[in-house]
Length: 337
Image (tube, rainbow, N blue to C red; front, side, top):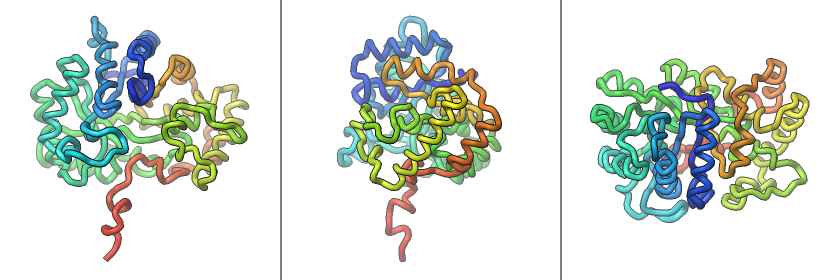
């Protein structure tokens, strides 16, 4: 499957971002008219509402022209931040994969999903069980291919080995966090993806809004994302101060190169040889328009060298931006005797 250089992410369509379905649909149509043929969503985004909106946007003959991706894993019986209810309505088990693909197909209004992705690792489910279920779905024609998202490099390798040894289908893509401020995957995950010929679909190439141009020293951040997650923009935190210093330097570099910070950020991600298609996640039409055209930007070696001085290769300025904390770090009992 051939995809456009930019992928339209649909996380902001629905209650989490733009609640007006017609506005969201107009953004999707504008992206398609601009040459984007790749849309990524997930069941958990606004508890299925994002998938419903995408399905509405593709109704009426546009479905065949789009590579449609969605994901499963997150809880579908609670809102974000609420305590757990039913532990079987989430995760990567065969039971949940088989159930949730049917729900996603219904919400999307389609007979097939081009790329079905495991949203996060599941410490309670052997990856062989997940790969087996996904292989069956591909055989049944309900999905065309499957991938993983925010998997550590060693789990990607384990998954590839299991697929080969058990004769199962394999993850053909990985969707990791990657941006000018979050470069940790350059050390291991990106080389692993290249080794196994996987497509790489980076999420949050604008670092959760930090590289949108709205975050600057001495300027109050007034954004939808900051209102939802104020701790991510608390400049008293040392990791956020490091990010703020880097953003200032990167903004100056973009200005010298006669580029917007948005285009600098997206062009940087696009220019890594392992990257297939970064996922942009606009909430408004202005957000989308500011990102279109980034695929035509090529950064010179001098600019890339300057970026490396500001944020060294393989470094995440904030530990929390890695997107996934393995249980060995989040559960103290696994680190102590």
